[in-house]
Image (cartoon, rainbow, N blue to C red; front, side, top):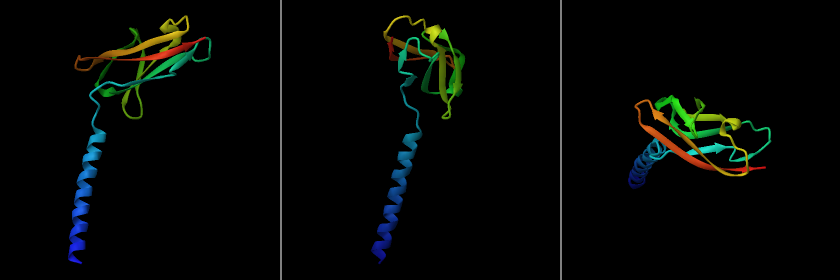
Length: 125
């Protein structure tokens, strides 16, 4: 009976340590900047009038006045996770023909460090 109790305590401690290590890893920020563009396929002439870029950059670390998409100033805000979101109108992108276009989100942190990340989206007629 003592062995079962000791084994149970050991498993509980090991499980707790592993669980805490896993939770800590999940809360750490990524080293690279990732973005997701919505919509990732844009249909010319559709009712879609803006493109939204979601990032994994904490909004509190961003100098919002410096944020651009393809060099054009954009509206920015924090999503529910506290990360940077930027929106640009389709008209400001100047897309006139089908194909692929690279969207680049760039700006500076409040400390002056530059950041940039790009994603390719498809444009259809």
